[in-house]
Image (tube, rainbow, N blue to C red):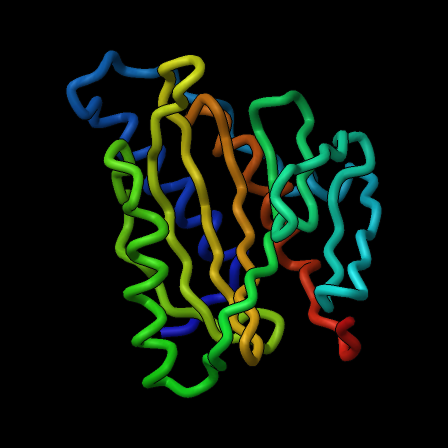
Length: 198
């Protein structure tokens, strides 16, 4: 099954709203107002171009770019220190391009997502193709160690040759995800791979 990322993120926001509404043994959250379709288009965006890793992506101009101590993290940006997006470029040493290789890669992505015992998958992983790259999409709840509050991640793993691009969109607390989904959509849609890599 191949879905476009905006469909995935909007669908994930719907799933999260249903989960929160059910309660899941937690106090019921007040419903968030539905985001307007123009929420993302009213925001100005900057383009980040990474010639070494071989990709470009847009992010909101009013978000702060942060430094990461991890060399694989190529872009990390946040509007408030809690909600964030990041892009990671991970050299694999082996190419992932065929359906069989993509199926085998899912074991790796499953392990990466569920390595944290506090992670709760909110949907099954979805196979996708985005920016011409095959990959997997995950949507899950996690518990923030600093605050103890639950947050959510929409998490993309995309494969080009022997490189895995990882895009993570975080909402903390989780109720913020519905509001942020249009902006996350816009960022995800803008991701493109470039022909030259260092």
